[in-house]
Image 1 (tube, rainbow, N blue to C red):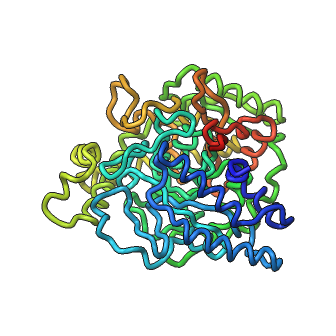
Image 2 (cartoon, one colour):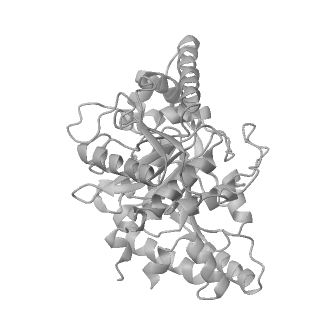
Image 3 (cartoon, helix red, strand yellow):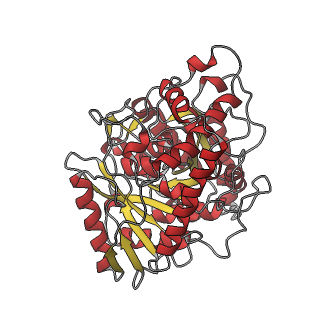
Amino acid sequence: MSSELAMADAATLVAGYRSGDFTPVQATEAALAQIERLDPHVHAMVLTDAEGALAAATASAQRWAAGEPRGPADGVPTTIKDILLVRGWPTRRGSVLCAHLPPADQDSPAVQRLREGGAVFLGKNTTPEFGWKGVTHSPSYVPTTNPWNPGLTAGGSSGGSAAAVGLGMGTWSIGTDAGGSVRIPASFTGTVALKPTYGRIPAYPASPYGTLAHPGPMTRTVADAAVLLDLVSAPDHRDWFSLEAPSSSFTAGLHDGVANLRIGFSPDLGYGENDPQVEAAVRAAVEVFAAAGANVEEVAPIFHDPVSAFHTLWFPGAAKVVETFWTGEGDWERVDPELRAGISQFGQVDASAYLDATAVRMDLGRRMGAFHTTYDLLLTPTMPIAAFEAGLEVPRGWGRRWWTSWTPYTYPFNMTGQPALSLPCGFTGDGRPIGLQIVGPRHADGVVLRAGQAYTNHTDWHTHRPPMAMEER
């Protein structure tokens, strides 16, 4: 029963709290038991606060018993990526350069909204150093591994959040995504993650990666992602890019389906190369949308690979964050060697090169804006490959160096600021999850979520659970 309760979605938990079938204390104990049992295998947590979590769960149980819950997060076990501030907890950012910093004296905006809503904070999730790459390991921590096979990577940089969610070590999490960092691990772990429209979830402190970086919900179901987005979308004065509060709930119309939506499908965006099993699974997923009444067609390439411009925008941010936490001579040698190499190769650019990259970004946004005058949504694979060996920067024998070489379908939509959802759509023959990406125009987060829900209503991929998550010991 403990594992089943840990793997319940937020909607099920709230219904159980309301009916009295179980309490937030029992749900929190179940999640903590999963952490104790499974985290030694996947290394998803850098901090666990069992005492604080149980105290918060007890307070939540009292509110539910009095008929005065704070909303759909009250009593829901929650983890937070260790990039975001949680009041009273340290923020290590995956780096030894942050080991000396005191605990945070305030919450990041999304964390504050969840705290106000009564969420139970279990702890913080692993990240590579400063969230800089698509896998989750660093000189500070051993690799975060995959719930489906601990020999494989969970992806990154929100790999700790994805692994925790996938194993019931918390019902949901907030991650960050500046180049695919919630969607990459969602694809690799068979979970759900949304990179919302830029500004939809306020951020503080501002990311060194600038307007590429989006906080995002990480869950096991699309419906939970919609609820979590509702909870954390309130504007915050600390983020001058934050959008006004949405005019309606993201759960409104969630089950309205995709009939008559115009959907373009691109298997490779014109420049990617997919594992044949990934392409087969994604093409099968596209057929589900057509069968559900959408008008689907395969589209010609929309743009060229913007990776060079992305590197020009990305690595100066990485250089700046290292500089921010620099404490003295010798610190450079303590930084992730691959991060140092990336900064050395791409991190020092002049203003002209940066403006050229910004012009590429603006043209990319224009092209996608034009695309969405014809199509409501774009479907792609989330990743061209499934999870590979843990501890590596790129798949063995890949022949290319940087994480962007195996994530071609995620970073373009950080450049455009569009909402993009990853959800599971199948498995390889050896049991590795495969992800489908749904991209919408800016501010169409609700349509993207509705399409994701329509897909899950017609399939059962989202119900599959890693065997180790359900084993009682």
